[in-house]
Length: 247
Image 1 (tube, rainbow, N blue to C red):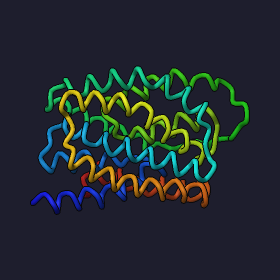
Image 2 (image 1 turned 180 degrees about the horizontal axis):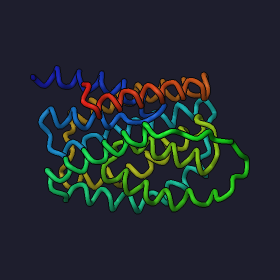
Image 3 (image 1 turned 180 degrees about the vertical axis):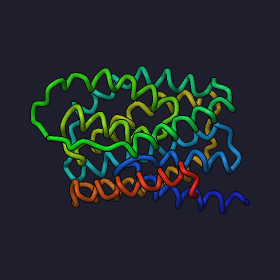
Image 4 (image 1 turned 90 degrees about the vertical axis):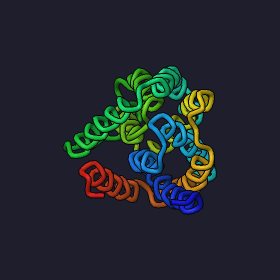
């Protein structure tokens, strides 16, 4: 495949996964295998994807802000807890053996599939949830996972934010995109400094992701939690099909 078709493929895939990432998650489970299929090794695919994730979440944050849905102070505090783990995770990702990374990616995707099919309990929203402080140690672990592999981190973040803070899915997504943006800064720096970014692919993905993310945030705010749940369900079905080898 020539470079121009690859760039167009990455852009169009980026629009779809950017929309899906902001509304739900799982986009990296499509992007990483695609980048590896296009000839990138594990670390290079991982780093290239971070360019798109970084730009995507800037776009989503600005879109949420335009819709007057934000809580920058709380988002920042949570992000600071995710930061150390993300740096450690990124260092591990660039130094790990490529074959081992592929095996870990496969195991992680199976784990995500299991969590997808497990029954979910109904969340009762609360202004002052008990044990809300648990979100901070949770962010340390989530940061490490996100810095290392990124795949499925949106689902993990959504589960942590909703189950611990007892907030609706629109606010969950608002915090989620900020936290991922914040910890992606040092993680992306690690990949750049170690030469693990394919810039033309990363920027094509980023353009698509930013487009999808901008509209995703607006749809989430204007249509509310009901549409977020629908997109989340579609994202889970797509990811399940991917993990089961349907496509």
